[in-house]
Image 1 (cartoon, protein in one colour):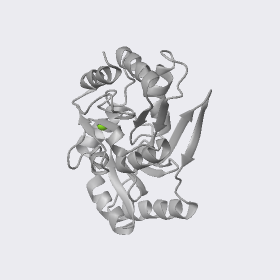
Image 2 (cartoon, protein in one colour):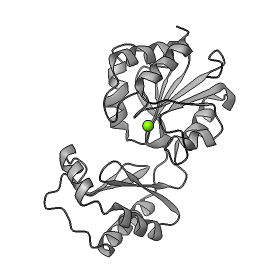
Image 3 (spheres, protein in one colour):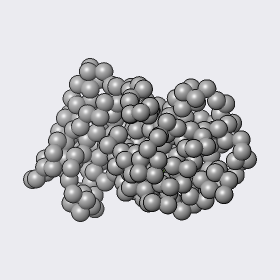
Image 4 (cartoon, helix red, strand yellow):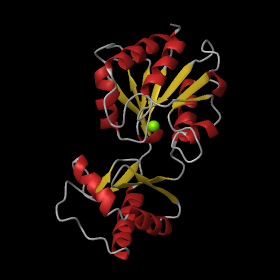
Length: 252
Ligand SMILES: [Mg+2]
């Protein structure tokens, strides 16, 4: 890895890197990450919404270190940034405008009609959720249980067709398949590369002084845009390898 003494800001992807998919980080990982924040600013970034970050990292790490001044949280790929100063606050949020939101909802309805989507017999919450910077369509509703989603994903996944229609209807926005039943729609170019640029701005550091750690740093992977943004990157195969990197950064 690049010289650990040079790293001034460490950025970590969450799912598959700090934690297993949607699971909270384990205790040894939390302890190491808390120790790293004593040494340098740490940014955690991922595609999920804020609540997920709080469940996976922010709430559990507070048991290891209540003073989290050096931790920054970037949900929805840096479309928002949360900082801690005695309490958590939002530094910015790049929200879709009301008009954009309306247009996206309308496009989803048209696209669903075009592909002949049949509303599920049982819905688990709303099918369309406004996450501020992102609108998410979930075919079974936002809170469908995992086994139900898995079955749907195997037997009824219409998202490739839906995605095609959505991209036709919203050519100026980004639409991506996410999770087992969802499609996320955001403004163009909100990805880990965007998060890297916002973090660099926030800390006023050189790209070469930053480090990004992720499990999907390969063409097509959702961490690849960070590499394309030009900061040193390390690819890991999971949380255990990430712990080794953190130990290296702490110097033990
Ligand atoms: Mg990942």
